[in-house]
Image (cartoon, rainbow, N blue to C red; front, side, top):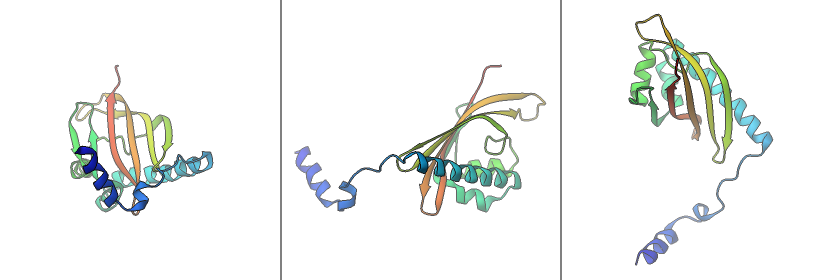
Length: 152
């Protein structure tokens, strides 16, 4: 029964859906994508610093989520509100240990390490973070990010 239902559903899909899966970008394509992501990251950092809500809305995916060190999750609007409030964010903080990986789709995963100030406190904390970029209709979108506090 399930097999017939699945077969019937698949027969309704357009042919491109049943075609070959996306291929992994080659080395040259990956290098080009990394450069594109660097431009988007720079644009995002400038938008956070300038509190440019319009640009932030164009870069964060509609289904974007950020997981804080505490486990708290923000959606797109909460993250933009944090940026507009001037909260410390991985998006515009200087980063080290940057790594870019490109996958089929294309999708790009960026990891790094950042030192952030503690809110209302002169001390600072180190975090390791990951950000996932996906292609959207109008270019690259930040789909998800997460920060993990490193031990002191």
